[in-house]
Length: 289
Image (tube, rainbow, N blue to C red; front, side):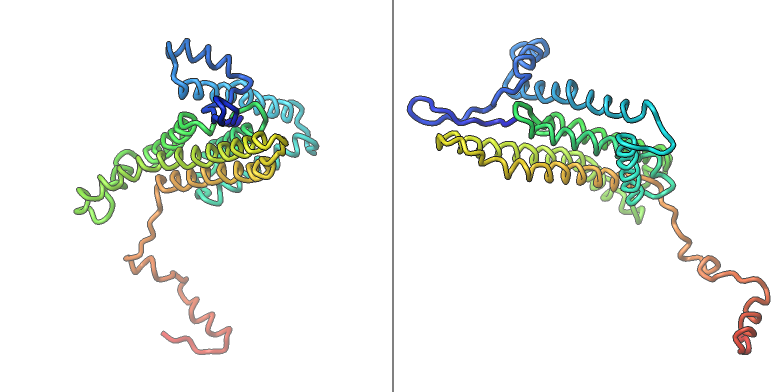
């Protein structure tokens, strides 16, 4: 769970770079199979991935199976909870992405939110590690958003229409706009992965420092408990920020229906012939041509 641990060494105190969790031995063996002689960073990446694949993903699958195996017209218990979560996430997606397209991406955004939230919370369990505390995991999540965003752009705007989006307006500024847009698109996944990893990794490091403080005093006071309680809120907020930014990026790639602002025929409301005179007559006035 926590990457640091203070212990006496050579008359002083040494801060270990990694506190092995329940899967540290398995992670070491898997890393050796994959990388030969793995570095500590590679072992940490494998260990974090194992927590996600062996615990979090099966947990989500089992809960969904239990809640949907006997669907009832009047839901209760777990089915009622799952339906409430699905409705909440669906409304959240529709609040950012237009109604016309929101249904196509609600499943992706909802799955992303649930998965990231559980990954964040998993590191609060003693002996575990939050997979989102490693840059490799957050990079994979950010790349998912990156791929879906540009799929949405090419799928619904068309290849030519989406490429015009990079050229911007006016068209003669395309040589300047295209490089700026490309840099911005590449910066988005970088921002997503660094923000999530920095917040969750920093939270685990802070918890480890407070655990070390309790051990150093010899009283074993759980100084980390307030931070762990705050970690529940932080994990939820970070998942929310990741998903709302994903929604914004997808919405920006979708086609926009431009109003005919320069067409006077579209600016002027159309009324049936005689409607103006009829309305004025009902009000007791004489119609003005």
